[in-house]
Amino acid sequence: MDAGPSKQPITMLADRVLAQMPQAEGERRSRAGILIPATAQVSRRLLWAQVVAVGPHVRTIKAGDKVLFNPEDRFEVEVQGDEYVILRERDVHAVASERMDSGTGLYL
Image (cartoon, rainbow, N blue to C red; front, side, top):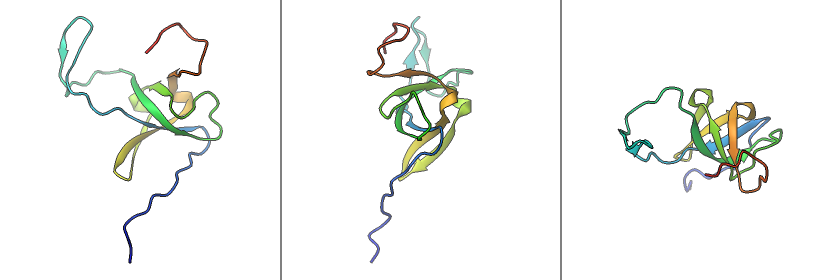
C-alpha cells in the first residue's frame, strides 16, 4: 500500500538559492501613514525572503539569512504545498544575517 508521497531531500545546484517568501501581510502603511492595500503592485520594489537552502557555489549566503532581490529575477516553485523562489546568487542585492560583522550599519 502506498502511504502517500514521501518527502525527498532537495539539493540546490551551482549558484542557486532557494528562499521562502513571507506570508502576505495584507494592508500596510507607508512611513508617511498612507494605507497601501494588499492588492497594490509597487513597480520596481525589491522584496525580502528567508533562505532555505543554497547550492555548493554560493559564497556569501547561508540558510537562515534574509535576502533582498528584484521579483523579476526569480523563478517560483511549489514543493509539498509550500511556495518557494529560486534565485541566482548574483541576483541578490543584499543579505541580512546575524553572522556578518561588517556592513552599512543598518539593522532589520
